[in-house]
Every structure is written in structure tokens, then in C-alpha cells.
Image (cartoon, rainbow, N blue to C red):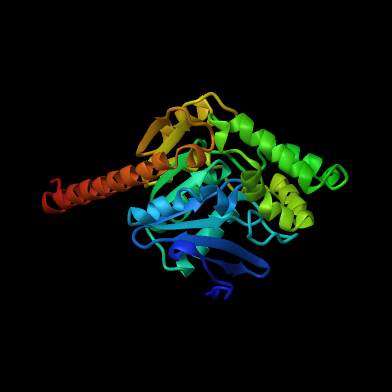
Amino acid sequence: MMLLVLTAMVMADSGRAYHVAVARAESLYVTEMGTGPAVVLIPGLFGAAFGFRRVLPLLAEQGYRAIVIEPLGIGNSSRPRRADYSQAAQADRLGNVLTQIGIDHAIVVGHSAGASIGFRLAYRRPDLVQSVISIDAGPVEGSATPGTRRFAAFAPWIKWLGGVRLIRRKIRQSLIESAGDTTWINDDVISGYTAGAAANLDATLISFMAMARAREPEKLKPRLPDIQAPVLLLVGGAKHAAGVREDGVALLRGSLRAFRADTVPGAGHYIQEENPVAVVAAVQAVDAWARQVQASCMASCGAVMHHPNP
């Protein structure tokens, strides 16, 4: 088994961050805070652990071990030129990390593209997933979303057209369009959301082009019924771009064994920014729900064992 790369550093509020090696030239960046039942947060293409900075301390205060795992090519994780950037491969890497750090039956919270990685993790490694929360995201079939493809097509020109400054302008525009309340968007936030990309722009552009070209080994849609864990979808109630579509909600509702959807009034796509308390409340709700489902299953299984059909 791979060993943790010894780059751990002490953070404020008893948190820490470190890299975990999952393959040659591949390591994922992990940020965690608190102790207790594990809550694993998976960011989308931008934001990384920074996007959950308001959620982590709240979860820790409520007695959870909050763990952000940045997928390959995202945030501070490595960006190898030659790697499988499919969401199935990303899910397997997350499973590898969770095994290495001793986590199972975690509450998995995915935002945007991170939600589909969470769905894949739930059926590929059901032993690791107690429940799933999708933040304003449906079951996307791969990393090559329209947004990723547009970015990849534009990538070869970014350095010539302004480099990191151009990326920051584009991210600011995207955040504003996706938000219900834009008051949280400022220069410091934009810098935080683009820090990983700015650290090595060439590697960032290469990894995003690789994501756009990635091919999934299997479709997600037919595997949704295999997800045993309860799934809670949080939807931003304000009009905004980049949110989950109605057909995505219908697909989840019609395919999953246990599914609920809740709306967060006034919020947009980045609910963890606009209403972090709602995300923590969702974690507590799905935690209780999953325990009820498990208890009900154990009771019914016990009844079947004691009273078999003739």
C-alpha cells in the first residue's frame, strides 16, 4: 500500500493538510479538520479546499471529521501529463486515499463535478460510503462537460491572452453568474479559487485538456440503482447558471433506492459559500437518515432470518 507523502503541515484550528500518493506521479491533496464521523468533501473544477473553508470549521464544531480531497488536476493535487482523468478513475483514487487514511462509511459531499465522482465512488466502493450529498449537481456522465470542453478549446490561447489574469476574470464572471447572492465574491475569493491553477499554469492547462478528452469506462446512469447509500440533493433556490437540471433531478429520483431533494432559498450553485450552515444541516440530516435506513434494514433482515418463508 502506498504511504502518505510526508508533507503534512499543521493548520489553524487543529486542522492539517497533506498529500497522499496514489500512483507514480499522482498524489491527491487532503485538508481535514475535527474528529468524529467522517465527512468527505469533493470540490468541483475550481475552488478546491478553499471553497469549503466556511464549512470545515462548522462541521468540526458539530463533532465531525471534515476531509476535503482534491481530485487529480484540481487545487493542490498533482497534474501529471499522462494520467486517466475520467471520473471513474478519480473515484478510484479517492477510494485509495480513504483506505490509506483509515476512513470507511463516510458521508460524501460533492459539489458540481465532484458530485458525479461521489456517485461513482458510492457504487464502486459501497464499503466507504454511508450517504451522499450532491450540492446543486446531477449525475454527469463524464469530466468532458460543455464548460470543460469550452475551457479546453480555449486553453492553448490562455497564456497569450493574459494567462492567470484571464482565468481570474473568467472565474469571477462564472461565480457571479452562478450565485444567488454575489456579496461573497471579492478579489481575495477569486485569488483563493484560482490559486491552484496559478501555481503551475502550464500543468493546469494540460490537465484540463486531458479531462476534456477523458472517456469513461462505463456510463453512470445505468449504475445509479446500484447505489445503496441514501442520497440528498441540495438545490439552490435562486435563479442561477450551472445548476442541476430538472431532468437530472428526475433521473436521480427515478433511479436511486433512497433519494431526497431539498431547496436552499436564496442560494445559487455555490451553496457552501452562500449558506454553509445549510450544508452542515444537510450533513446532520443525511447522517440521521442513513442510520435510520441501516437500522430498518437490520430489523427487516433479522425478521426474515427468524421467520423464514415456508
